[in-house]
Length: 257
Image 1 (tube, rainbow, N blue to C red):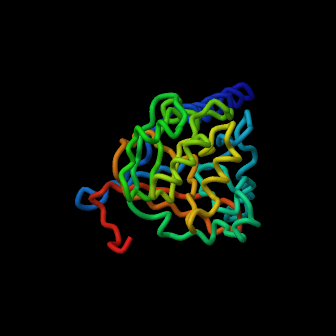
Image 2: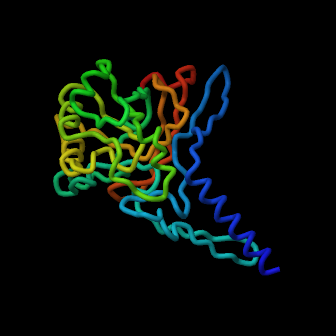
Image 3: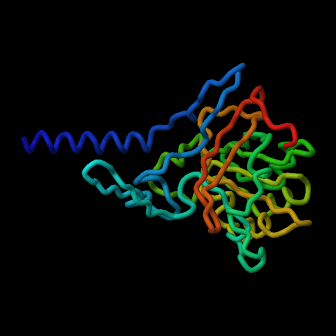
């Protein structure tokens, strides 16, 4: 009996490891008239990859069992899993407390361009020039080698990921109309340029910020135009977990957006 229970626990542990390390495409839902919806959010659970952690997030969800119901408690970073950052992430003082709850829905909802970046290459000014982002594009999501290398399916954090460099951030601000930038790992910025990149993106430029959306699940998502809906929890905080979805361009969108 004891050996059977131990064997069962071992199998369960192996299954959980497999779930975290095996890549799977973004969940797809079929709508009407050819409309397809893609869930590009990572699930949040114990073991979800977390910044500077070798084991993933611990005790994220704790459940208390009552007589008839279960009550769950969350204990997690505001930046665990798929999340949206706000200007106050860089500095509450400089941005007058512009927390995630104050972000404009028109920034987080609308047409978006999914762009495949060169393999195992950071997103520099040179790379951005080569990508030829169309004039007037307000939202971009970079699909990088982070997806190909299944980084978010590993529990252990790695600093060897693809991100936006300081030069790339400056180029994005000065040469595009982008207001929303997404990426497929924990940080939009390269490890060496974290402070500089967030400062450039989140500092006011002619009354505009570029809002980073991080940890997007882009497995199976083809580059091209989509519609994005990315809604963070209404936390009075610098960031918040978000449920982000893509719709193909046959889906309806309010014309004023």
